[in-house]
Image (cartoon, rainbow, N blue to C red; front, side, top):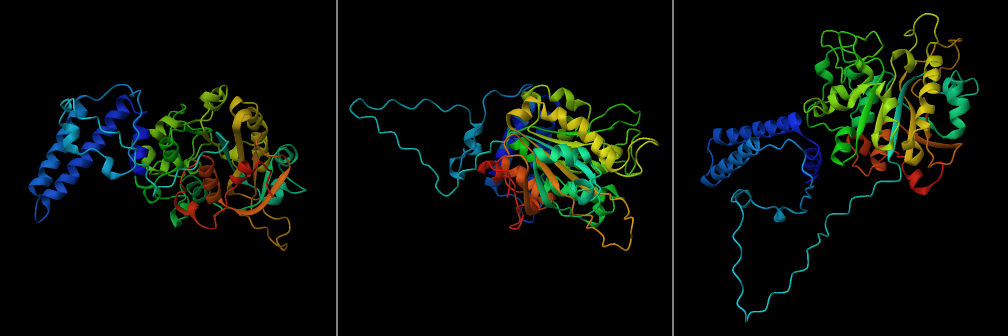
Length: 431
């Protein structure tokens, strides 16, 4: 039923080429199922064969009459298998009008609708309607938020306006394990820790859903904004995937697929969601001008230099933590001034990788590079607060899912995974 609801919601927005792709995929799947049954040792029973023929004929009719625009009326799936019409009834055309009842026979009383009691009501979405997740490379917790911070805008100007997650920690120092966890709940693998030297080892099949899939199924919108994302000719392009021959290669603008988790999921690649919503960073400014043009979930990733990776900036320009802080000082005020943020927004300044500078004194006790902290900014939170609960990238996913009343994916559903979404329900600024 949950898959049917997701497919129904997604189909409502499919038109033209994307609708044809979906229908074609359905036909291929149906043909495969029928072929498997017919190739079995016992073949198909007469009833199974008739049902299979009816299903294939019905889908062929759908292809012939595929609409070019989305239907205006939405389809509400039934809550139980018994209420679903049979394939035979659906394909037999309009039913004849019922014969009139004899005059002496009173009309029967209408039956009260049956309300299923076994299925719990879905939770309602919270007050946050627009989430902006900014992913950077961390110089270390103290270098970001401590007394000797290397990021004065983050620690001096933004920190007093928000709620600091003091015990937010990464799963790994590399970017891909953390971003995969934050958008799909998938755990780190040896391939993702190594930067996916073989692209195929990091591609997730169509059964692995992402937050983006959930949002589309819930009638929400999403966008990923990636700085420096261009094609082979240097022109801005959408959904730039890793080159199998050189998966770690970066563009002239500093874009690297290692900072873009969405290009590794077939659920987003195969039907065009990635190509439609995974866009160059320059498009953010235009989308922020109106609340209805701003996606419900925005994933913001600067290029390698502005993310804070040391040694990735041009000579003579700010590098490492200083570059990341300058990026925040430019972009975050634009978000905070947007109508969507002012109405019901949340900015999460997070770190998706660790790239601390070497310690001046190697003999000193090393700081845990995976403890990085994170900051929440929202007009719905009391400023200046702190939350000392243990958070991870799984927590980011779980919290965003809770805010939009979505089910937890993968490891985000763990019993020990904390969510900061209740802070918005309670209307406080953290512990």
